[in-house]
Amino acid sequence: MKAIFKYIFISLIAINLFGCQELVREDFNQIYPENFFQNENDVKNATTAMYRLFHMNSYGGGGVYSFGRDGYNIFTEVTTDIMDCQWGDGGSWATFNTHRWTAENTKGTDKIYWKYNWLSKGEQIIKNIKESTVSDDVKTRYIAQVEGLQGWLAFVLYDLYGGVPIASAEVLDNFNEEVYLERYTKEQMIKYIEDKLNAAAASLPVKVAAADWGRLTKGAVKTILMKLYLHEKNWVKVEELCREVMKPEYGYDLENKYKDIFSIDNEINDEVILPIPCNPDDFKNGWAAHVLPYNFPYENSAAQKWSGYRMEWGFYHTYEAGDARLETIAAEYKGTDGVTYNEQNPAAHLAKGALPIKYGVDPNHVGHGAGNDFPVYRLADVILCLAEAINNQNGPTDEAYALVNRVRNRAELGNLQTGLSKEAFNDAILLERGHELYCEGHRRQDLIRHGKYVELAKLKPENLAADYKVLFPIPNGAITESKGAVKQNPGY
Image (cartoon, rainbow, N blue to C red; front, side, top):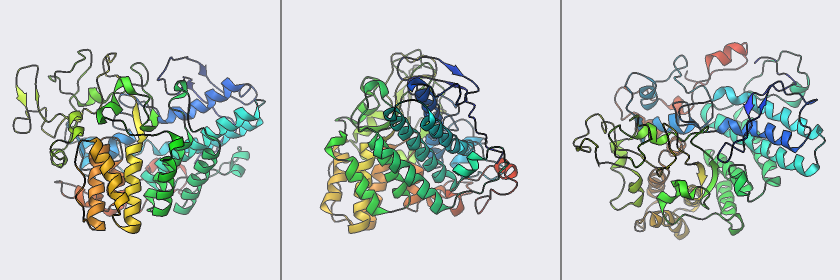
């Protein structure tokens, strides 16, 4: 790793959060403690630079999440049984779908890795906030946000790659020295994420004003921490945190209708715990453009249609008849050419599956950008995690059934069959999670946790699925840059 410098050079567009609301543009270059961190606005802008790491864009743009190939919520989902893309079988999409990536052929799985440097940049931001002249209240509020963002980013990196290099305070203080850092061990990563998220939760608010929608809250960082424990199958901690987030004082509740979660008219709703706000101008929700065939009769004629993402037919057929979530998936449509397309008559439009439309129509959608917010975490996810934690400790109790049924009943389905074994109940939860959270970026983690990620991938022809591919390879450039201090993940 190259020497870490004391001063942070940030080139950013400082916006109100991710740009969901009115945009205010300010360009900052060569930001030093001497000329910055002088007031709350400076502190807010520096913090916003870290939020921008997670921002959405229609097809890339550098965020951890996006609607293009490099988005965590996209490429991980395409490695599972839920999602595929129709843009050719020889490129990135087939590489993802059949687990053909290698250390030499990462095809987009490596871009998030390089964001590990922001964990150290976050430390510099925290140090500069502490040394600034703003009030203690301002310092506390924004340091908590930076720590929460560090914990969130570290969890994403840990989930994808395992340990990453993280500079200590001593290394950062000796910024003139060339230092080559090894990756954190599993234990070190878990402790780092725990420490950051717990510190953030101690000072973050339970609620934020509508103008601050998208900034971290206590419930958001506790949910990320719960996801870490879910990743580690620490069922006691998962249960504890799920119950905490579900307390009335947090104010979360299921929406009455599934499709309303993703409606442009209902963005700030009680089900969403952690959103990434989108807008049609700068931080575009490009989902519709990526999904819709050119001849789909979409209500907004100004929207572009690229005919890419599909829900695989095999997974589509696992839904029960009458499931209200099917209202957001099109398995058949009458095209603008007058022809009806479906699985029996797919043409090129439905060759790889149904249309996971997911989001409601945005009347201001122009070109490839809509303004529907992206839900990173929401209450239905937490409810199902609690049911899973209970089952793995005590088997399928009445409470565990009631939790799953709460999600099923919202989808206008009857209660789950009773009398299931622990294993069968886990299978039911996994399927329910897939139906509920499709194309939101959870499926890979779920399949790995349930031991089915490699198994399902091997059902596809020409796959190179293997147990070691539950982690993605470290970019070879990172290994070279570190003079060998950074080691490759086993198997690659």
